[in-house]
Image 1 (cartoon, one colour):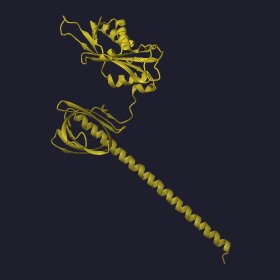
Image 2 (cartoon, rainbow, N blue to C red):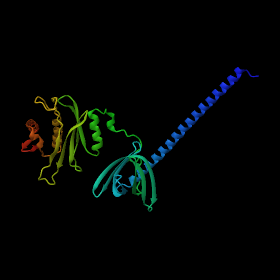
Image 3 (cartoon, rainbow, N blue to C red):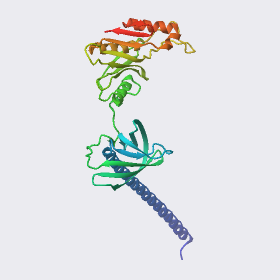
Image 4 (cartoon, rainbow, N blue to C red):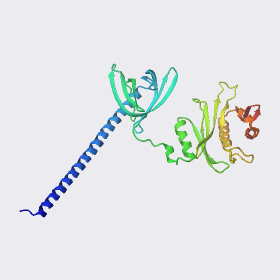
Length: 336
C-alpha cells in the first residue's frame, strides 16, 4: 500500500510537470506567432518594395504624358501632364510635379499601401489604374505610359535606401551645414562660389553665391551663420543684344540681415549699436562677380520703409555710398 507521503509527492510532481508543459506550450505558441508575424511582415514589405519599384518604373515611362488623378479628396479626377516625380521606398513618400493648363502643382504624399492593376490598351501603350493609400486616404491614379521606354538602372527617381547627402557630414548647427544644404538642393546645375569669414562680432558666417547664367538670369548671394540663412541679395542680369547697350546687374532685393549687437529690453535699437558687416560682405561678393564678368554697372531701388526711420535712412545711405553707389532719390547706381 502506497504511503501518504508518496501519494502527495506524485500529485505534486504531476502538477508541476503539467504546469511546465503548459508553460513550454505557451512559449512555443508565442515563438511561432512571432515567427509567423515576422514572416508576414517580411512578405508584406517585399510586396510593397516590389510595388514601389514597379510604380516608379511606370511613372518614369509616363514622364511628359498624361496622368489622371484628383489633387485632393474633394475634387474630381482630372487629366494632368506628369512633369517629374520622386519615389522613396525608404521614406515611403511620393513627390509628383504635375501640370494642367500652364499651372504647375507639386505634391508630396506619404504612402502606406500600393495596389497596381493594369490592362493592355495596345502593344505600345498601357492604361494603368493604380490604387494608392496616400496620407491615409485611398486615391486612384490613371497613368498613360509607354512600355518601350527603357528605365535606367538604377532609376535616378527611385530611392530604395536612405540617401546620404553631402551636407550631412557637417553638424546641423553650423553655417557649413546650412550653406551646403542650400547649395545641394537649390543650386543644382548652377555655378556657385562660397567663402567663409568672421563678422565684426567674430562669429563665423558663410556666403553662397548662386550665379546667374544664360539659362537663368536670376542670381542670389545668401548669408549664413549657425542658426541658418540670415540674409540674401537677389539680382537679375541684363545682357544687351547688341554692342551699343551695356550689360548690367539690377538688385531686386537686399535683405542683408544686418543684425544689431545691442538692443534694449524692449527690442528697440540703441544709438550705440554697430553693424556686424554681413551685408557688406554680401554686396562685396556681388561687386566682385560684376567686375569679373564685365558688367558695366549695378543699379537698384531703395526701400521706402527706411524713409520712416531717420537713423536707418542715414545708415543705409552711408552703407551704399561707402560701397561706391550714387544715390538719386530712391535710385542707386554703381559704375564698375
